[in-house]
Amino acid sequence: MEIVGQLLDLLLHPRQLIEPFGPGAYVVLFAILYAETGLFVGFFLPGDSLLLVAGVLSAPGSQEYTLNLLIVMVVCVTAAILGNLTGFWFGRRVGRPLFERPDSRFFKGKHLLAADAVYQRHGGITIVLARFMPFVRTFAPIVAGISHMDRRAFAWWTIVGGLLWGAGLPIAGYLLGEAMGSTLDRILLPLIVLIVVVSVLPPAVHTWRRRDRNEEAAP
Image (cartoon, rainbow, N blue to C red; front, side, top):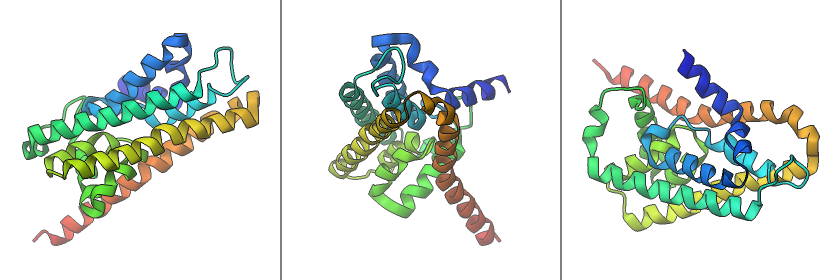
């Protein structure tokens, strides 16, 4: 329960991952986003909310230390693309036996199955859609690698998704921070909660529907 509480705290208060590091925040930002998208053990990291907060902290007057929006976007897009490429390579190397791997603290088979359900339904564009789905974005590149998706197609969708996610969310956060200034602090937590809920909902629905179909098909 203590671990669950810590994970929820990270999801809902991502600012604490950035503010203490000053200029080193860019390195922290890169490491977290790369781990979330490139290493399956990083599935619990708060990517969406972290990107939004990084954008907010890039807005003039949002707090004592202001990040540079352009650097934030370059760091986030680069981490997203490299992370996906790492996950894809890992999936091709490990293959389907990964689906038989037992659950552990840092690996949950249900997240892999959720990513596979989205991939089977939407194909290559899953790599873009998954960017905005916690847990699924970690496992979607791995599933694409396991399925031997064409490398060029994967690279294309990875670049598109990386740009939309890695630049789009910081820009949205920047605009919010610039428009609302210090008053943003009052709504930032509810906004992050909303982002987490909306992001988690699609893969949860996919998994639930797939489970229902499997139960109906079972003798």
